[in-house]
Length: 65
Image: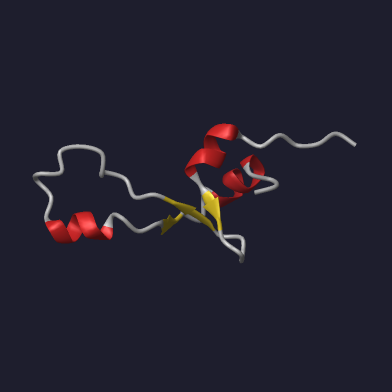
């Protein structure tokens, strides 16, 4: 039986939880950080859950993760 290939780009960017949810890093944290408050930057450190509309697509990209 042929095996599915993991999308390597997605594997490096997303993480699956034990319950099967997919987590991502926060956006807007690469540069131009001087204009953002410390509170905002601190909250961006945390992982966020991927939106429900994107989750099925990512489940196909990460079959074994």
